[in-house]
Length: 199
Image (cartoon, rainbow, N blue to C red; front, side, top):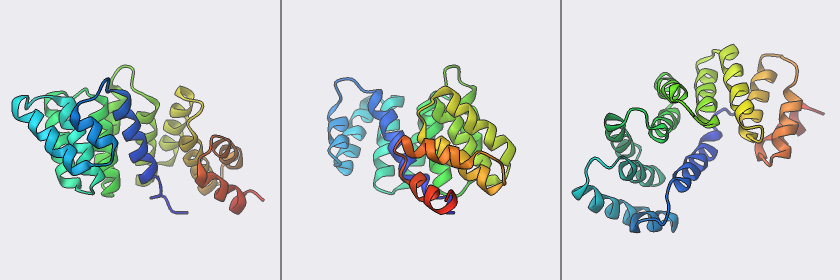
């Protein structure tokens, strides 16, 4: 199985987190939502010229860089925001996701671990921690974190899918149940897993 397929879904999840936090929206936000990432970066840079420590704008500019595939610039913005507010869960998860994309699973785990320590951390924090542990090979802890994500959000299709993948790989029971649940939640990769492993 290809364990690197979650990148698009993680980007989508990060994008949803970004969208949920904005009300009204700035010019940069509107440009971002229209897929005009380069223009959004210019707008966010203008905002940061007068408010260089605005963590939300640093995060959003980083997301625009990430959408363009400029992970180094994204990392610079996320890390700059992190230095200002090390408890900002969106930044912590963005850094975890970015390091996941770069196959630096230890750093991904580090930032996911910081995120789960923040009171009120979302299910995504536990999922990202599970993904990093999974990639490192710490399967028992990864299973626990996927289960924690599911406890927090019983409709987290991606968490069911990856828990199922891990159960299947480690010959534990319940992988097909997890694939079925993920499929019922419209997580597309689960349909393929059901066809391939649960006939």
